Length: 615
Image 1 (cartoon, rainbow, N blue to C red):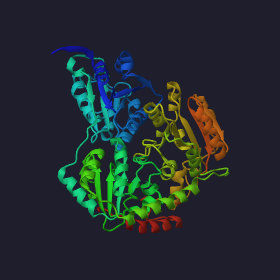
Image 2 (spheres, one colour):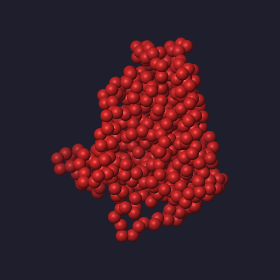
Image 3 (cartoon, one colour):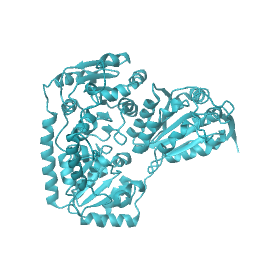
Image 4 (spheres, rainbow, N blue to C red):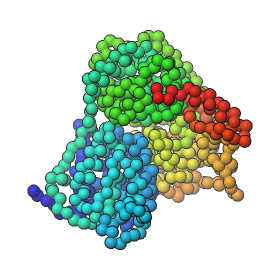
């Protein structure tokens, strides 16, 4: 057996550099690069190895460990999980800063390889700087925080551990059902230790997307259930896009006469103007999607885990005879809520169903109801996004300006607060992957860092970030990274002077406005953040506009410009779109001295009666 002597860190880098993927017949590196902030836990080991790798595994410098890990997550999501990135940090705070990003990847089923430095395996200098000690367990380090938010976790405590650990890591990262974050905690002394690795370990390997076929019995049961449906209804989740099944879904919906509603992750599965596209579903759903969901007798859920925002905390789908058919590559998701399962890749599953359904399609009466509901919603929604001269426009009116200036190839990016709800409901995507919102974990601070990852995945498409002042203040440092890397972003910052979305929820549940808006938080002086100067100090070109008309003018200029463009606009924190939507289970206190809370509790107790728990 031929061997090559390398340090453990060099072996990791060499192995990752020799993993490839195939996309549309083209061979590409599986790993598009490695994000890194170096410290004493990784600078001497992985730092030296990455420097030697050069362009075989490019290294990108971030300004915040969480931010660069979120960029890596967004890159993989925007790449339909077919390409990914690695992220390395020092031990201690550098490592634990990535835990939130690991949770984002875990919840959303996104592959990312995390390589935090770890303590000395030989324990000679214990306790080392930044080491977290457990008084009862000498094997624990800060990196154990990653265990509940990793699909696979391992600790590299000997150089030969690299071989089984990396093989298992790649198996998880490239598996459509199991993929998610992999954490390999890398002891810092081991990174520098050498071992005679088999040359075969570094042989180039090509990874193709696995297409899991449907089980014959499950397929027959699914066909039988659909054929009984008089009011079938499709819920398109992120699995549709990850599978590349949007064209198949479009053809299936047209042929069978089935309306399609979309989750946050599944939005852009169909063009907004398609006859059977009802748009968003659930708490942030359209009137069309939600009204027909309550009539549906067979809910065909494709590539979705049916989380509470999509189901209105399971108060939707109110037809007492309704059944759920779940097509999902992961059995864990397909079996939720007593669904009839069809475990398969979305593309192959749809093809298999179509081949067996013969001439069956939904009744014309149901098709007519779909057409009417869609037409009514389109007319209704237009009123909320129409131009306005208001000094403080609503989020919906800002979205209207963005929509009027949009091109079909644009990608809009966002995450937490009120904007995801308004965008999910009102944004009209034309092309697949044109809507990129992180709402599985609803992570404040994802927006700008995530947009950088999206832009790196799609350099030929305009990437537009929608972000509130709260999320911007929480994480904005990757503006500097985008500037440094020459990546263009258009960032539209809605300044409502606080956490407007949660303030509205607070009021809706009977609470008083408290600690969400800046003016109702404890203060001696109200902050007056100059976001234009702040963004400019990070290298962006920034401007503040006085209303929707000026916003549209600024957007036109930003399209023609280079580099990171930031447009700030003041918005009203109290307004959200009243049409559409659905109840969401946010528990209201049973006991309160405030009448508003007691009244809200009565409404809550009535609302929970609509939940279909265990059904």
